[in-house]
Length: 362
Image (cartoon, rainbow, N blue to C red; front, side):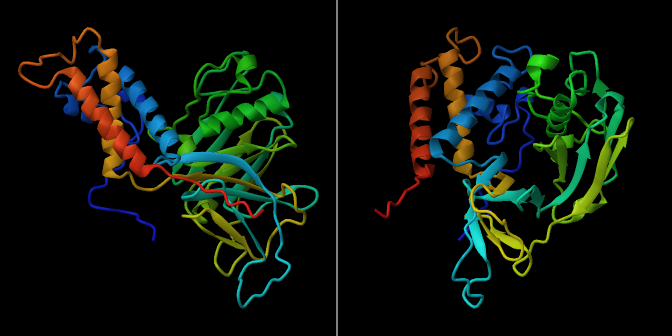
């Protein structure tokens, strides 16, 4: 049974660690636990510094428990495909299946199957862009739901975080466009473009981020595949416009033949994907999947663990006691607070730890 909600679950947080908003807790909740005033840009530590402690605490929780209650992106996960030799429709309504490396999938962004010459998408709503005339490219415009994002180039050799660089060649340009659409750190292109931070691009109202609506992936042949993140076939109404040069593109096309009686279907809690009418022609590394995963609810105990773990980090780093104080006469001293909080955290994380068993048939 998949638990999707309990009355004690916390609400959704807008994740922005710089302003004190984490996925599991907030700086306001940490301050309330410690009984101090809210953190600001002028406190010591500052709000941004507390946000950084929260970021590390939440990642520690994910790594320790081998689970996650955040939205995580898994890109280009390869799988072998074995077709069932004893297929019987009465017992099985699929010709073959794969199991993803992560459970609790939220959305399948791409399922690309190898047909012997290219990977063919069979999921989501997909558009493509090939920047074969990158030197004359002036802008790329993506629209969805009445919102518009304009991607602009910077040919100066040092890329602004809200632009893509086209000074070095076709693949560097294409890769930088993907980083901008996904709002990722430009790991591969940074040594050439001078990028130093995660890219950021909002729509004309400066409210909606492009990575919340689209995902881009660079193929081996320099083609950019752009996927709409809107549910189901809603992305069919999105548009892609390319200005300048003779760069080729295809519009968003609905490839989501998703249903128990259609091309494929999945069980999100286990990460199983079942293929019915479309499947790879080869066996090894023939399925390439990109998806988001993470449990859809944040239990109150995980919020408690993240809040107390951040508080522990604050206590250990506040050597001067300027902010937290250490009045053991009128309250609990800091060491006792730390010991109590850390014991609670350890207990919660052991309770939520996910154990994976590997069975050997030999």
